[in-house]
Length: 258
Image (cartoon, rainbow, N blue to C red):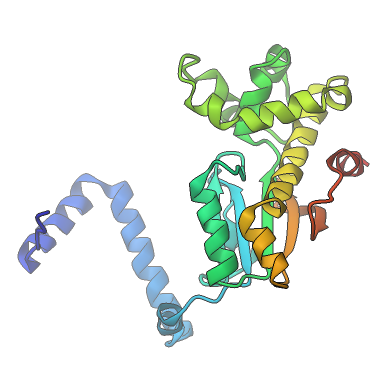
């Protein structure tokens, strides 16, 4: 493996090239400099404390959607919340990435709360629904929680590419499992309920994970929370909070629709 070191002069030239040719990237670098300077002005020890050790009390498992940033919507600073995000906020036992995050957060960071947060208008859930008999309704819906960008996620996809479909298979199975409850609902309500049900189910998956079970056996106190975020209001809705794997998802679904 060859490691290249960039001299000061070359680094300066490269920085100038970025500024000239990629202003959208330079904007981020400039924003970072202003943010760093402002943080130091407010608290000269801020970065020193951060670099020393992270001691978050919370693990956030959320969607990759750029409109749902964990720190901002919970009002927490860097270092106060440990974050894992993926499409449709899934917690699958076969996903080594998510399971490793769970283990690290529980065993190394000793977090006290695990939050699984979905959001209305989720593009992953929209993809599942638009591949079912609700497809035409989905495309025609004026749903107050969704957006054209959300619904385009599925319609602009290559149907021959199974990567996303495989990733979302658990959401599809949930839709099928609760078809007796969901299928008679108008599409807009069906969409909302499935987003909520998915967040509840993924929280249940946390409780059933090996890392969580080991921690509970050792007497470690961890609360698991299921939330959903409304893009239109910026508000979080609490779906449930539980401590064991005894959550009755179907009754929780009924509660969310009240």
